[in-house]
Amino acid sequence: MADEKLESKKGFLKGINLKKIKGMHITGIKGINVKFIKFRKATKNFKKDFEIFNNNKKLVYLDNAATSQKPKKVIQSIVDYYEKYNANVHRGIHELSEKATLAYENSRKNIAQFINASEDEIMFSKNSTEALNLIAYGLFEMLPVRKGDTILLTRMEHHSNLVQWQQLANKKGAIIKYIEVENGNLVYDRTTFTQAKVVSICHVSNVLGTINNIQEISRFAHDAGAVVVVDGAQAVPHMKIDVKLLDIDFYTFSGHKMLGPTGIGVLYGKKELLSKLNPLFYGGDMVKEVNYEEATFNDLPWKFEAGTPPISEVIALGSAIEYINNIGYENIALIDRELFNYAFGEINKLDGIGLLNINKNRIGIISFNVNGLHPHDVAHFLNTKGVAVRAGYHCAQPLHNYLSCKGSVRASFYFYNDKKDVDIFINSLKELLAMESVVEIKNKV
View 1 (tube, rainbow, N blue to C red):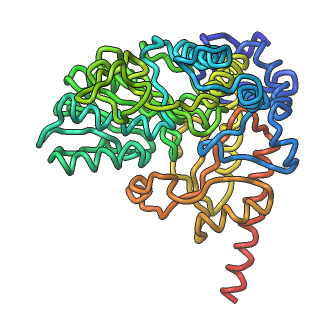
View 2 (view 1 turned 180 degrees about the vertical axis):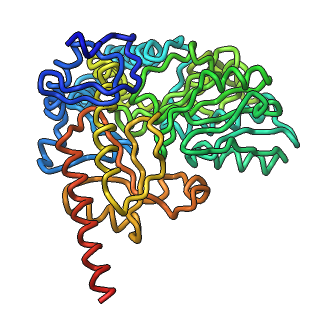
View 3 (view 1 turned 180 degrees about the horizontal axis):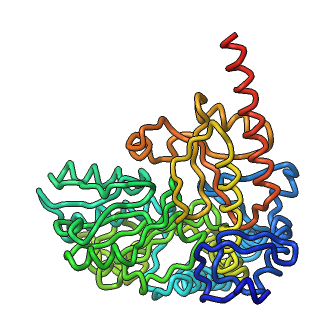
């Protein structure tokens, strides 16, 4: 055991190869201690926490970048709200409303602690897309963004962090520039940011899986006087986020990609910026006082939460965070890395597979194409084998165009996946490739 130099590095996982330890093979991990070895043997039990796998015995779910599955604990928290204390939150002077308000605001407190923010810096939206729109429209008015100003994005952005900037730039005469992508990574230096007024960037690419260096980008952008917006939808399910350490101005993520329900997103913003930002939606609960001439907005964070909020969804997201905290991000990262290394190694052995990214600095996302086949056809075949993947542009059509491919197949992993899932996925691809080879031979004859 000593020869393997199993040393703890505060959970940071970097690539070295380890030999078989107690019958288990782990590759590409640095910073593992012995307790993780024991933990990894128990990962087969995670699926027991998810009723969907009990109801779909043959399901190999590799579409986690689109949405994750939900543990029983999260689903039960929604049932409990509707069956035990269903009421609207805030201002209700009765027991049910007070209980619902307490659960709702406790979730906000847990989410704030989850990313090292203050409670009044956490706003709820219906998803990350809505939060990014709120930021974009608010910043264009607050800064303001004028004709000739530069908005800096990247070539790997999801449509949710692209289209609204295009629309606003067209209206205001602003200029959008893009950080280039090479071999799966962003290519930039300090001078890239010199003219930017706003820098909006994904923490992790939903197609390439690339983990961008947000701390460095934020430093360069702030030195240039720019506001930094980060789309964290793909990052938060897989890695611990500390918004203070990253020193970003705004950060967004969606609950449904991290074991929570659909219909709930989170917007973090620095308090000094949020206080200046105008809401995108108006109505009840986001006001302090209203008369026939004007209205006074509510305090943070309720200023940005017009109308009845997604109460059960917020409570359930708090429950999802409790579940993630119980597992621990160090353990999630270990499982992610082990599964990715195994899957990446196996798919690389297959002839006829074109990978969109060969860089290993990423989360467990593998986007690829099978030579001569449409991504939808590949996904359909995999579905006949019980394997659920995503096919198409993945809401990142400009990136696919930039990479000269008409869509891709995306397999994305999460901690409840296992080696058996990967084997079924790879063996199904082998079967598909063998079928295609037979067709090619017949066509030549």
